[in-house]
Amino acid sequence: MATFDGYPRPTGPAGVRNYVAVIPTSVAASAVADAIADRTVENVRSTPHQMGIDPPDGACEQIERTLSGIGQNPNVGAALVVALGTETIDADGIADAIAATGRNVETLTIREAGGTAAAVGTGVDHARELWDGIADARREERDASELVFGVECGGSDATSGIAANPAVGAACDRLVRDGGTASFSETPEFIGAEHLLAERCVDDEVRDRLLERVERRESAAQLMGVDLRGAQPTPGNQDGGLTTIEEKSLGAIVKGGTTPVRGIVEYAESLPVGGGLVLMDTPGYDIESVVGKVAGGAQIVAFTTGRGSTTGNPLAPVIKVTGNPKTADRLASNMDVNASTIIDGESIDAVGERIYETLLAVASGKRTAAEQRRLEEFAINELQPNELAELRGNA
Image (cartoon, rainbow, N blue to C red; front, side, top):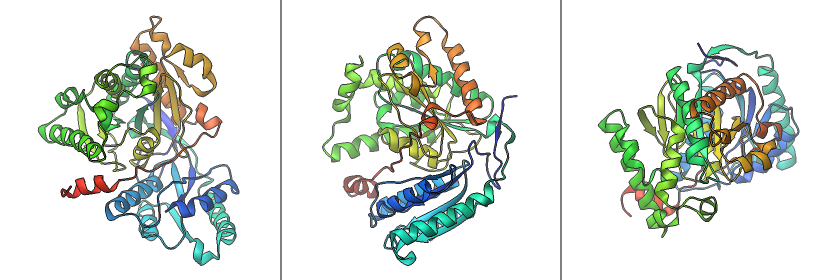
């Protein structure tokens, strides 16, 4: 039986890290959240983002779902929600949703605290008290079936679809066989290969939902004057040897492995624990896509890259995997697994086993390259007016 040593939570699966999350409700509160985290202890992390104080209704709902999900991630033991005080985003509602999972939560309003300096001081006091409440948590052995594993790709090249992505897919298959959940996303990168994913869906409902999400993403892009099929692969992908969107998509979807598609959820919607392979409808922008899966409950993310990437996340460890031998050499300090050995003859299953062992080690506390260097990016997917119109059906 595969196991890891995680932090038990009052409800839900165990965490692989034990953080106090400082969660701003808007860009106006993000600098204060950062300052609070910087001036407190090591295990306090902020999630600064770019969203404004008065977004349209549909966007507001998605922001609140994302921030609530971030606070409920198993890696979060307690949370501090920070608002300027003029936002339409419901700070108390976000705090209540997090508290409902048994976590200690505080809220802080910059206006009521007396401005930024006073808010930072009060916030540091709150964060230290919250940390004191979870500092004694100790890891205990947990079944691998509690793991929710998000997978992402970025900076793809010709090696991605033949080395790094299928190797991560083999690791996903292992986790699914052990009862866990694997999830990949980036719906625009399903285009050209969506028919293959549709054939793998467990029933017609999941199949129809998958195809509808692909069509909606493409239609929304067209409303904004973007031809996704014409815009892909990106110039960077082309420099890396990819020639068509179909080629890119076929390489992208193999990072989810070979098991049946058991569901597809909305951006930042909860991913089921013990759910097998479940897709999430996200944009292709890497940072937003990773945040969506972490808000959905992913404790760990694998990020495959051919041309190179340094990205990480404040709350979830990001395991970097490359299939490009030059990237493995030049960015060795940013990579965790070298999958380019597949090109030299190592089997995909063997590399997949190495990735799975890395997943369990990271889940038990081993720090990734991104964590060691405090590479932490956070951004929420922003719904555009045309997308909101499309969602309402009146575009």
